[in-house]
Image (tube, rainbow, N blue to C red; front, top):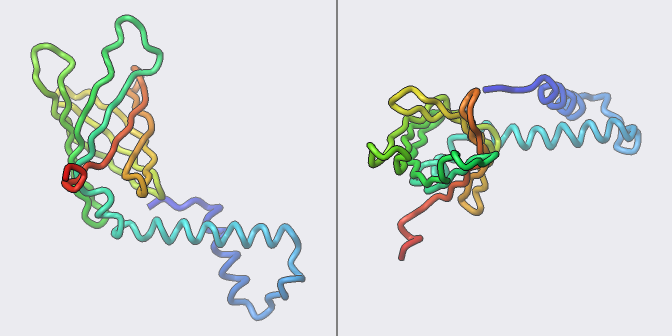
Length: 174
């Protein structure tokens, strides 16, 4: 778990102010102190969401259908492609695989392992690794209400692009 120093500082200020007997009345706070306290309270709410990761299992677990495309397209750039991400999240552990139509004629489909998963607030970061060792880094922003994720991908020292995913459930078809 990564917690920034400023977040810890903000939470400490809020706790000190809340539990100190010497806490001034609201009208005695300066505008700067009021902004700092408001920021600390907002940070504490975000931290509560982050620490409550286990409750997001139903959101992450499931089948996600997506598409990716390349930035800086040239005549030699491969076409945009689709993929399916199958994911299971238990507590802080995430197991997932990706299958996608192969872009090389010798293969029908490509299977990739999902590793180095990190979830913080509404961000989902992971690495996709193919059998040949090619690794692609993903940084996605989650939208629980719409059951979507979108963001970017990049091959270190190689191409990059955009990606969008939508969670698909059985009731979506019936």
